[in-house]
Image (cartoon, rainbow, N blue to C red; front, side):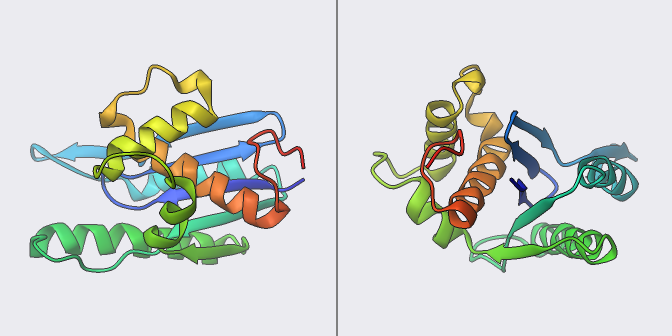
Length: 166
């Protein structure tokens, strides 16, 4: 069975992997430079290399675009992170698929009440992966990366439970 990796790009994004033996989620690596938090490209590559060292793997990367009411600097940083992930994927010759937030959220957040998708993502991640019961709303990035990976796993194997059982 392929391991699935979900990536929620952005400076405050995350990546999460589902394997036949469990799952993991981690924030996008960052460093602080001149008092500002920035993406740590070298660490992103190191983390990715450690994940893809054990093939097979299939990656699902959230496809991002400019959003209304977001600042120019914010959108540039967001797009930069997305581009870094695309470069990392291409340079490691790993199969991947881009998925829009609308597509994976329509399936994974269906039936959850409320309008705050970040909170809804944490709720669903806790339900599907009870080990994450301590997650708070601030963990939405890891929850979303995990749900992207789960969405991809379901797509690849046409199953619903997180255990991979049909």
